[in-house]
Length: 168
Image 1: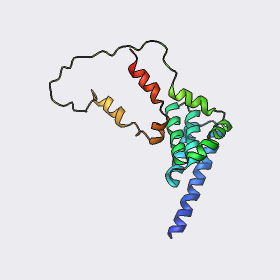
Image 2: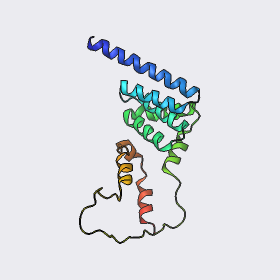
Image 3: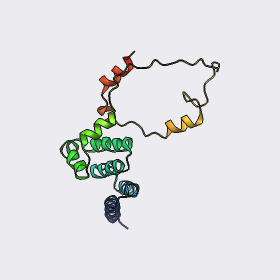
Image 4: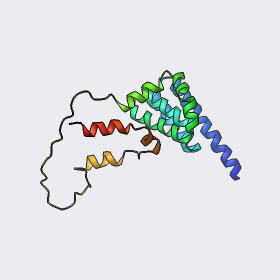
């Protein structure tokens, strides 16, 4: 099979998975839609439409952090198209982009911050077996987290983070 024919077959396969994802989403199966969109992404690579479709799937499944991650990838893949079409794309599925971004950053805290307590270490100077993590579960949880993308870093309100850190 020639290289051109393989690419055509992969594009067709990705198109079929994308179609299956849309059908699953229409039928109210966000988990199935997410699986189908992920298969399309594996075959086609990162694309704006696939990232946005995955964001909608995760929003339908009420997984806000994953939806935010896919929105950030959509912004990273094609920033101009994201600015032009993201709000309309989400509105077609019943979501408001501004509200999703507002919920993703979370509400501002109004009360005073609670002071951190310092636990005395029972260990000596030897290194912890899991780095800064106290046990294997915490290590597994942190190692399973996806890396922070440049688009996610750009969407962080650093003034708000600094304000939270400086609250007494």
